[in-house]
Length: 383
Ligand SMILES: [Ca+2]
Image (cartoon, rainbow, N blue to C red; front, side, top):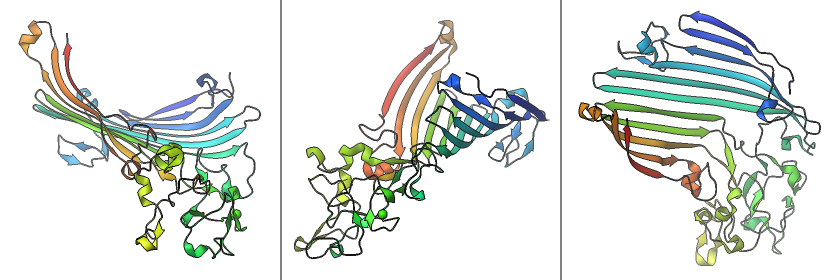
């Protein structure tokens, strides 16, 4: 399939070793398996070699924050790198019945810095990218209220009800009915301790016409990884961190761990924050409750997609940590072995995440077992 087509590339040599690319790429992406998707946009690359940038330091002169062109020998060029890539594209989906258009902007920066002094050497490197999209047009049934629309928001944005608070005793009359003036929820009878949602269109009824954005999308806006390695004589220590930010998850997707007692299931830690008011037993969690009242009955009202359950899913993980020692002795080489390495490594050693801390859920793998930690001891021989 060929729609659009043509690539215009202008490469400007700005400085020896530095370059700027202006790329205009109207192109069809049919070859990527998505039929009828056309992508038109601008890309801008900026790379520099032999340039000490803001994030780098020139260890030879011990100067920091050096900016400007700095001649480096070929050997040194391998040790420093700074690269920026910016992109804005408009994506059109042209299939009949599935018309959609979105604007996507993204930027990626990578940097590497390495040095060596005698038997000691080090390297640090990182990548950070930011991407944001907006749905310009899609085949959406026009909602009753503009604030409910998916169009105009990033793809995948969680749309749901805004949980305001829990119903209190004072919201009900003596017969157990909601007092006049309190909007009626459309998801069945409620009691004190159930989730009270905002009646956004103020029509006196809380229903699906009151939904709006209650979080971001499950696709991160920010993605980053950074790491480094230090080596001294035969020893080396390497670490890699990776993380993502600017995304949400709906923890109701892990029903077993969120909905207490449902299907005779257990109540997990999350339910410890349950609303409870038993004055005769001296129990009153009303001021601090973070979870609706506990019940063994199904409760449609409390388990709507809402800000009660859509949570921030940012995380940072230590993906890899490895300590190694390289034997590189002449005796071994005589035996035809170039290198003998012993190492101790750990994968997914630690996860820093509010979701994991508060709800024992791995943001990358909401249900089931969290990402597996693993430890390895190894020997590698290079012949
Ligand atoms: Ca309403």
